Amino acid sequence: MTIRENSEERSARPDMHPTLWEISRSGARGVRPPVVSGSPAFGIPDVSMRETPPGLPELSELEAVRHFTNLSHLSRGVDTHFIPLGSCTMKYNPKVSDKVASLPGFSDLHPRTDPEGMEGLLEAMGTLSDLLRSLLGMDGVTLAPAAGAHGELTGILIARKYFEARGETSRKVILVPDSAHGTNPASASMGGMVVRSIASKPSGHIDTVALEKVLSDETAMVMITAPSTLGLFEEELSEVVRLVHKVGALVYMDGANMNAFLGVLKPGDLGFDIVHINTHKTLATPHGGGGPGSGPVGVKSHLVPFLPTPVIQKTDRGYSFANPDDPRSIGPVRSFLGSTGVLLRALSYVLLLGREGLPKVALYALLNANYLKKRLEGVLPGEGPGLCAHEFVLSAKPLSAYGVHAGDLAKGLLDAGYYAPTIHFPLIVPEALMIEPTECESKSMLDEFADDFSRIVERASSHPSELLAAPARTPVSRPDEVLAARDPVLKDTTVSGGQFRKN
Amino acid sequence: MEKRYTQTHEWIALNESGSEGTVGITDFAQKEVTDVVFVELPRIGKKVPKGGEAAIIESVKAAFSIYAPMGGEIIAGNQALDSNPALLNQDPLGQGWIFRLKLDNPSEFSSLMDEKAYNAYLSDGGGQPGHG
Image (cartoon, rainbow over all chains, first blue to last red; front, side):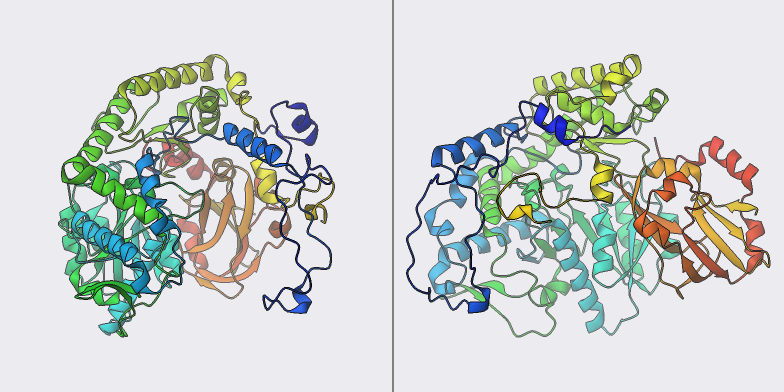
């Protein structure tokens, strides 16, 4: 059931905004760049010089401001709507963190500034490393990785180098439970390792019997998402760690879900050798729509020499950003200091909440998820009556009888004024809807959401066609995602003028 | 040609001599996967064990691994799927075949489910992996 969005429909929708090129007026100006006479001496080769001006839209400043302000009103973010997007931990980003990251001493620094000229930033990054080391229970931390999956890749490269240094080059297998994040097998494969999946038990927990059977002297690492994508704490985590260490392999924790035990438990104390934390989830930094993110990685002492370079070091002459000449390091994984703007926000958040506040984040996240899970019990089948962690999974399978799928419920929620929950993930639950309220939402918000969700599920059986046509209240209703994937058009050829015309 | 089925929803049919097998996914599987948008075919000459990952199909929903129902060497991939992955949805048991194998051990065929056993497996909830 796919409703195609065609161009007639697009122009018929009054709230569909024209592009900058469509409202361009020849001769209109917002800014007047200085006139350059002669050939500018930027060292640009003649062959690369443009002969005709680029086809940029022409607008007054007011027109440009209105365009972007109006567009911003079409957007849904956590500042405007509740985002129950499971696995993504879409929490509120405190504005004070933005303020700190915008301080001119940080934001005006050129990336090529010598370390002596950016001691303040280095100290801030050094402080964050120390705080993360403590929060993660690890002996060394790198802030370099640009995202969670990049942190995973960094962790895998560290493990590979570690086994190479030990002469155990036959350790190439990375085991990943099927309840782990989908990025885990992808990162392991990118890191040149062989990936094997381990099936979960019917309860959703790791099957230690099955795990023990596949562990061998070829196993490099087992990657565990804790809590899992089913929102479950592993029942037998200490046994899993013991079994993996017994065969000489490492245990990795995907800390994407660390909001569930931030400040309460330390991954290092649980026996993990490597862990990454997603600052854009757990430490309330913005989700960048593809970047910039940040995925710092912590390791135990035996892996510290393998951390990426350069490293922030505290010396008696202050902070430095150095390339220690240790061949064991995996080398640079990211240019400069990493996503510093994001990391500064993470530092602000950790300092703002402190030792007493951080565990409360986790406890309220658990409370909110369990309250909402309880409120939705009986509306759709879930994992059962027990407690969940920071998120839970429902199955829209019973609605298939009415032709309604998880995606249709999500579209219905858009009309009701919410961002959609995660759908079709984890894959081991048919028609999965994954809901994570985070600690930020109030009880009244959760109650309102539960009422609306229940009402939409009811409509799914009484008026399925209504849901299949949803959303009616968004600027775009149902883009044809199949057509978009099979036959993508990456250039807008509908506008006149401008370089997007060529196709 | 008789088809046999796996618990992971692939089918395989043998050629007349029984030395080669053609592999695809079942109608149930194509419905679960929803509209296929991309198929990553295996490299010709690649050896896959029984149950080993041989191909990947992507839909707007997710990416799915396709496992070899029997062990063997890849001798062909269905190039038609490159330009028209929708064949997998339109005709999963025919034109939507994915790859051909030169079989290591043709007798593995008899260990797979026949159509009746596969249908019983489906109605027994075999199509509902994990929880829910």
